[in-house]
Every structure is written in structure tokens, then in C-alpha cells.
Amino acid sequence: MMPGIKLQPTFVEKIWGKDTVPNHPIDKLGKRIGELRFGRPERINDPLLVKYVYTNPRFAFQTHPWDLIVQPHGLAGGRTQSWYILDAEPGARVGIGTTRPQDQQSLRSAAQNGVLEHAMDWCAVQAGDFFFIPPGTPHVIGSGISLVGIQHDAGLPDELHVVPCPPPIGSPTVTTSSMPSMHRPLGCTGVLLSDGGFGLRLMHMHSGDLIQITNAGLAWFIPLRGRGDIDGQTWRAGECWLLTQARPAIHAASDADYLFATI
Image 1 (cartoon, helix red, strand yellow):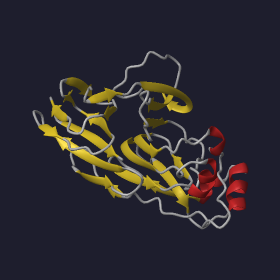
Image 2: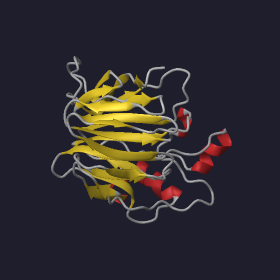
Image 3: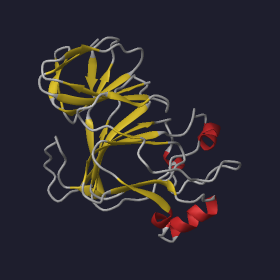
């Protein structure tokens, strides 16, 4: 078995996207790319969705279902999501949660009247900010941002992606802080997330470094900068690899930074 599977990217057009995508030359004149999604290999139960998001204008309000909504459908739970900010223009912001508790009707009314953004808890962002978004939390990515999004995908059918998603009976009203969970710019090494349905680390390597990772389950290697190889298979920034062996050897041919996700 190969030590890693290079996941194939899909470019997703969005009206709020950008006409240039870092690390991925595209021949799509006149089209805006909002997401770069990495597909799942066949015959492997892959519960994480890894994607790059590129925003120009602000895009639509989203919320991921509460666990109590999806469990009657035979699913383990709702979606948790994390954002690692790669680049942000001056004044760029994200909104996560609301400044005050909001019930179901208030959220629905604000969304229908186009004023939901006024209820969101907005936070200025910069490259290196990391956010964790629990299930059921309203969230908006503002303009001028490039990020890596990693979400625990419970296999939710499309009809559960309703915007906005009402909380189930007995659930708390929506409120949370949009302050980043932490700030870890490229060049740092450390744990970003340890208890969110998946684990996530930011790692830095110097040119010539060789590390052997011990992996007890599925793992995702997401190079953000640099190039190298995984047991002889060439990798470069902007890709995503699913590591299928317990002890893959990762070599850096230049200074490099990557995200390492595990379940």
C-alpha cells in the first residue's frame, strides 16, 4: 500500500470567490473560484472534509446542524469546523455566533430581512488566526480572506444544510465569541485542536528535515508552504494527502509548514 493518497481537488465556482487561486494555476477566464475541495478516495470511510476558501464579497450566512437534529437521521452528530487563516486583507473580518442570545425565530427573521450580519459577533482577522466552530454556530467569512477549512463531516444529506438551521427543542440559544481560539503564524509548531471530533496540529520543518509520524488512525497532511516527499512521493503546497500507513516518513526539500489532522 502506498504511504499516502494525494486527494484530487475540485474547483468550485462561487459568486463571492476570487479569479486567482494561490498554488493552483487555473485556466478559467472570467470565473471566480470560491472553494477548492479535496475529494474522498473510494473504499475509505473519510469523515473529514478539507477545503480552501477564498472570499471576495461576503458570502451567505451558514450554520451546521445541532447533534439533536441529525441523530434521528441515523448520523453520529453535527458538523464541527475549524478555520486556519492563510491570508487576510486589511480590515477583513469573520463573524462567529451572535453578540446576544438569539432564539430560533429571531435568527430566522434576521436572515429573511437581510440584517443578520448586524447580529453577528464580528472579529478582525490576520494570517495565523485559528478558529474552532462548534455545531449549530452561525458563521460568516467576510471579504478578502483565504483560509483552510477542516470540518468533521457526519455525512449530512443536503436537506439538513438549511440556512438558517433552527435549534432543536430544548437546545440553548445561539451565542458565542468570535475571538480566535489562538494565533499561530506559519513558522510555528503546536497543537491547534485536540478535542473537536478531530485533532489538528500546525507543524514547521526546515529544509532537509525528515520526520516519521506515528499515526494510529486516518491522518491528513495539508502542506501550506514548501515542497518535499512522503516516502518518495512528491508533495507541494496547496495539496492534501490522506496518510494510510502507520509511520509515514515526510521529507522537506525546502522550509515548509503544514497542517496535520487526525481522527
